[in-house]
Image (cartoon, rainbow, N blue to C red; front, side, top):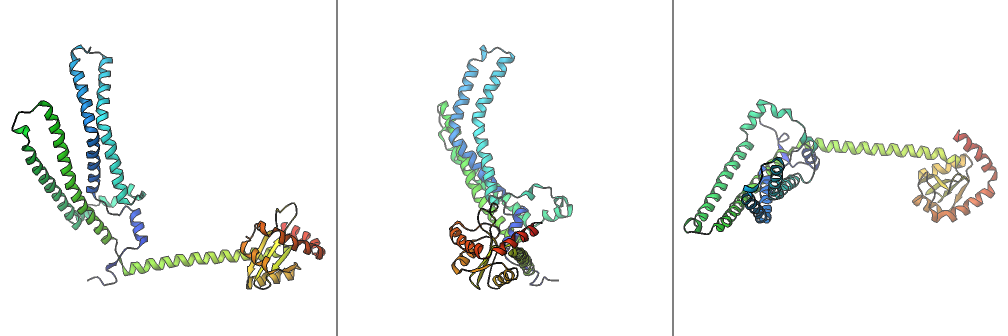
Length: 367
């Protein structure tokens, strides 16, 4: 039965699916890309170090063979000669090894977008399944990969044949030359061959990476149903987060309303804002915001304050600033110290009996 339009993968992968695929290690990867970088690094390192390395090896060889007859065959002398040989060889090889290792890491990082995928380090037992292995052996991707491998052989072989023909025209093969010319010829021939191979690999790497990019994007395409399901799940997550925020807000409002009866004063706007403050000498460095609200919640704060006899003061600018700048459970901003102090001073003088009751009420709440 043919797939319906709903089951066909016609939609581009979403950012979420791309991220999940990357975490699984499913992104465009080309082996030729890695070969290109490592070969380029090797050619670059040799271009800078080959002459110095060759000179060092030549000097070591001359010294070794010149004084060979006078070297005593003992443990100490043999060890010293081996250490010297390894040092000379290290100067020639280590720069190339460092350059190629760094290039390999850079190539992998570029292909992965400089992101690490931990899931690619695990063992995937499904790859050991003979049936799936047989299917992969005759898949389109395998055929394309085989074609790229053949292209590599043809391209590199062609470049090398053309280069060999050009080198055969060198005077070295048709006329007597000095012995020193042989070293120059080998250096020039090696760099020519490596450069030609590098050019061939660059073309093949571009084709290979382009194919892998296309194949990965095609494999990650989604059906319309998958796209709908993902959107539904995302909206569900948003609804859960919204419900949690509403629950947290309700809990906070309950806590604020429970603290209003222990406030020193409620400053109002008079109807738009209401802010409840408390100040205990020796305990609070500044008046603390116990509760704040606007519109309907401000009316609830005012009603609860009136029910418990909490003094209410109407001061529009102070109420507005306290609501905008004050944080519940924290002291008021320093710029409001003077204005709030004046309000509290008036409240303390005119509501002495309330503050006598307030001490008892706060002790009950603390208990």
